Amino acid sequence: MSSSESAHPEVARIAADLIRFDTSNYGGGRAEGEREAAEYVGAYLEGLGLRPEYYEPIPRRTNVSARVPGRDASKPALVLHGHLDVVPAIAEDWSVDPFAGEIRDGVLWGRGAVDMKDMDAMILTSVADILRSGAQPERDLVLTFFADEENGGVEGSALVVRDRPEWFAGATQAISEVGGYSIPVADSRAYLLQVGEKALIWIRLVARGRAGHGSRLHPDNAVTALAEAVAALGRTAWPVRLTDTTTQFLAGLERLTGDDAGDPDALTERAGDSAPFLRSTLRTTTNPTGLTAGYKHNVIPDRAEALVDVRALPGTEDAVLAQIREIVGPHVEVEIVHQDIGLEVPFRGDLVDAMVAALDRADPGVPVLPYLMGGGTDNKALSTLGIDGYGFAPLRLPADLDFTGMFHGVDERVPVDALVFGQRVLTDLLRTY
Image (cartoon, rainbow, N blue to C red; front, side, top):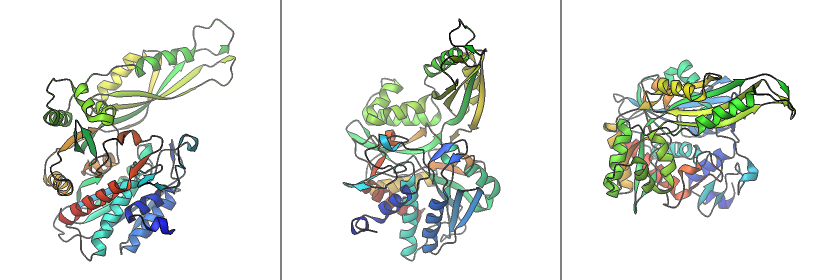
């Protein structure tokens, strides 16, 4: 470690180290693998006197977990979990090497700085703060770091909860990513606490036609049929449909802004750069993400395919799929590649009260709003074991940082002082809850 690196807080150094492991996940079973990152995490846990266990059901797709004994064994255990994989990064598009873990001018850059090696580092160092002081957390903690979250967890958390449910014995609640961070609201700020996430449905559209020469008059063209279906679905304006969580979220924005005009989209615009991310939580989204067809310029193929990322509000999955089939028409097949449930848990209870209180102690007087996340997390898998999951990776962020735009984006980065803030809040929570 260089002297310049050692000058940074431990939470930033750990996050930077994790970024330097290229754990890119391309989906469909193509991935660099999480093994080295998991071994790094395991070695850190061993250094704290814990006994990590590994589970690698598929070569190099490594999961690691350890239990931290709490002071009160009568209380249900709390799961703190993160994922070690990241989406790929095209280095030529970045201002820095996406896997260098560079800290520049007080900011950590790299793939995973936001999603979610920052939270992995906060979990590790928060537990280290407690154990190194000779103390214990209030209750048992189950620390788990999963593989394959960026592919829906099919080669990670889904296999872990199936084959290693004993890791989570006695746990009833979980904390993970994409919540607890601040957003600008009007001239102030608020924190978002994630209490739900939309259902995930990855579909493939398939159009079929007759193969032929590219010079022919050829109305039965699979590429044309697919293009029409993709355009129709991609341009569909899904209506706002509020859930209990989004109703509470909008009510909170109304209180903070004084805007009671009743327009949910206009209200979310008061949240600055976070608005596009938050607007997606109010409705279904259907985004085409890939096209495949043909093999030569002058050959009309007999098949064309498109991938579409569908995120439906919890409980609407069947209705959304039925509407998608109507939109693309009877001549385009809709295949489900992967589907997972939506979640919504109450914005109340002892854990919610404890998270809100921990934020208030660190940043007094700033309101905390519940929200429904447009994406998904490994909380979906844990829910099959009866574990309620929340998003709480606390970060106090500058108002001019487009934080939500960093997820899967170019030049992903997070301020070091936000990581220090998050570590402090998590440590406080784990000492007291």
